[in-house]
Amino acid sequence: LTNQTFMAVFNNLVMFDQHVKIASPESIVPDLATEWSWSPDNTVLTMKLRQGVEWHDGKPFTSADVKCTWDMITEKRTSNWRRNPRREWFENLKETTVLGPYEVRFTLGRAQPSFLSFLANGGSAVYPCHVDGPVMRQKPIGTGPFKFVEWRANDVIRLAKNRDYWKPGRPYLD
Image (cartoon, rainbow, N blue to C red; front, side):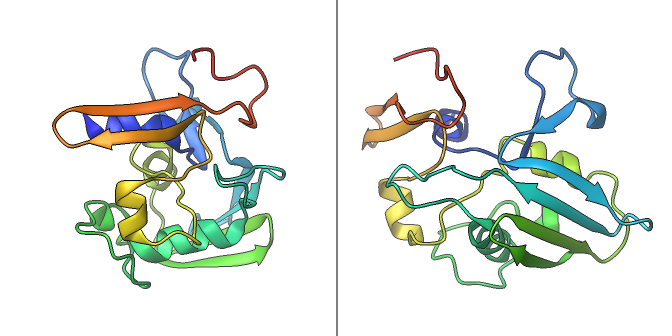
């Protein structure tokens, strides 16, 4: 339940098209990534990233945030998270490389057809590199359609419309 609630605070690089009844690799669409391509041997995924996106605190989203996120998930970088349930999903990810401020490369140990689907999963949000894990647990900052307002354990989670959201006309709800 918490994961579903906070998904509205974040964005993924890619996501499953929400207008398709059954998710499949063919229904993956851009989100923070605008386009992607695979190497001929399907072990290197290169993504171009959306420009002009800001974190809820006004700092710019860049490829450094993507590298930082997946370095934390693969435990190449300290995250100060209490638990990292996604590490196993990305065991085949050998390296995340910044190619420029809006381009990133994922290098896999072997071809993995499910890799893009893992990135499209709701649990694969991109996190800000400039915010520490303990702060993110209490006051998460994302790029998503809703901003965190309040959380009281076993009581309430409040989010507010992100009026500066980068997708025009969204979110639909206050």
